[in-house]
Amino acid sequence: MYAVVETGSKQYRVAAGDTLEIERLAVEAGQPHTFDRVLLVSKDGQLTVGSPTVATARVVADVVGHKRGEKKIAFKMKRRKGYHRTVGHRQELTVVKIKEINA
Image (cartoon, rainbow, N blue to C red; front, top):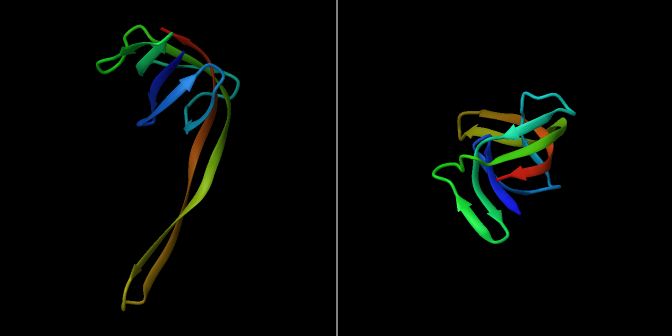
């Protein structure tokens, strides 16, 4: 059994027991979180596709912790002007472990 969940404007294919790194959630570590935006559920080979979401489906996950992603470097430059600038960015992430899929 698996589901497709949308969070942080991204879609993830999840099954029970999976561990994901998603964009930061405002939930403390150790607390459960329920994903309501379930786009697709596959149970024993039967697909249920939402329009846009499956109304009765929920995915329950435990928040394992929070962390920061790897550093991404953006380099700006204007040729022949003497302008160059390096900008770094680290995304705030939440690590979640999927407990169950309720369809």
